[in-house]
Image 1 (tube, one colour):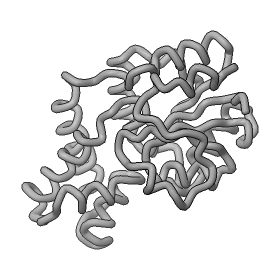
Image 2 (cartoon, one colour; image 1 turned 90 degrees about the vertical axis):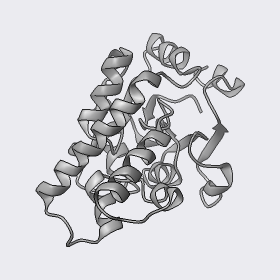
Image 3 (cartoon, helix red, strand yellow; image 1 turned 120 degrees about the vertical axis):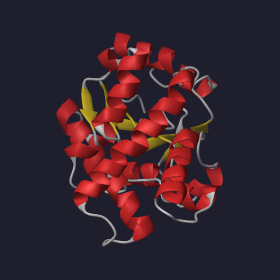
Image 4 (cartoon, helix red, strand yellow; image 1 turned 45 degrees about the horizontal axis):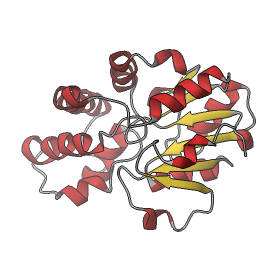
Length: 219
């Protein structure tokens, strides 16, 4: 299919930063909140909104909403400070964005990230102009794998969901695309191909955007 719109997750899909998110969470959980979690323990919980991550790890009664909001910003400041020197687009992505832009194929970001982190990426990399629509954690009631994020993006772009292609890096993200009735391309920056075996909406797996697959995607 030649897509009529491209919907991008942010972390692990536009930038290869999930290691830094995991490290920031691990530091917060173990060194400040007294948990005793492994790297793999943290990695498997990293989907959805930040307060949802905190609830999954510590239960529903540990923190107030205000406390979770404060911890969320603290975690993101840790992440941004450490990742900023390495902030760059995944190889080959700039060419894909520019090609879609020149062909007037609308693009959106659909992410569980808060605007604080989305702005960090878009403004530091000067790529905001490529995206007509941004759907963040603050814009939805239901987090991934609920399809609300991608369905809202498609509606705002005025494109039928079946004509959209989603770019994701996690099984939960690809499942979100499936639940929205959308095909998905997976960047294997965070998870391995085998972890997506239960899904049948995956068009391609690739470590970056230099793969030959992307040369014909928009033709």
